[in-house]
Amino acid sequence: MTKSQADVVRAALEILDERGADAVSMRAIAQRLDVRMNTVLWHVKTKARLEELMADAIVAGVSLDDLPRDWRERAAEIARRYRRALLAHRDGAVVVAGTYAAEPATLDVAEALVAALLEGGLSERDAAWTNWDVVYFVLGLTQEEQARPGSGEGFSVGERPALRRVLPFLTEASFDERFEFGLAKLLPDAALRP
Image 1: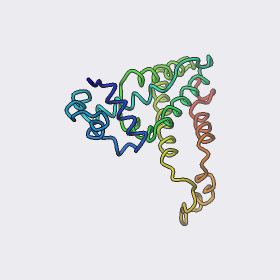
Image 2: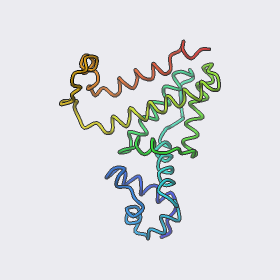
Image 3: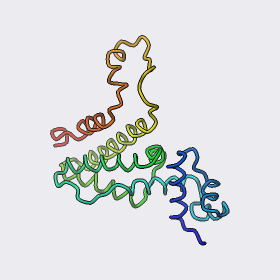
């Protein structure tokens, strides 16, 4: 049976979900598809290209349908959906963060977020940079969430008084609350108005 680039990406995502990012290789994909490695390489050429396509497939999980009308709430909802798309795949944030994919789904999400920010009155530069800030925040927090080994027990900050003072908040696993707190800081109404 003839295989396509979509088959290669689908197999890579299956391996990702089952065994994690480190297990994804051209050889593992070839074995999964029961083809020779040359077939996989024909469709994706390099591991970097495979990772770009995987990242875009993960980001394609961000639905841009039925978004709120208010620009700020729309931007926040896009960020929420982006986080959910990353969390839908084991190591999803690691895969997406490791690429600079200028692929259709990734560009569509960026277009929707930047359009919301421009509608909110940001300058072109501020809209572009706020887009990056939101994306980096979502990627970073989601990477931490996916890598967290459980409770913060045994987490030591040593003789660092400021860190000891806030330690309960550093080690709590309230990722949803931390996410919403961060979004509120990145997308405040007053700060976005020129």
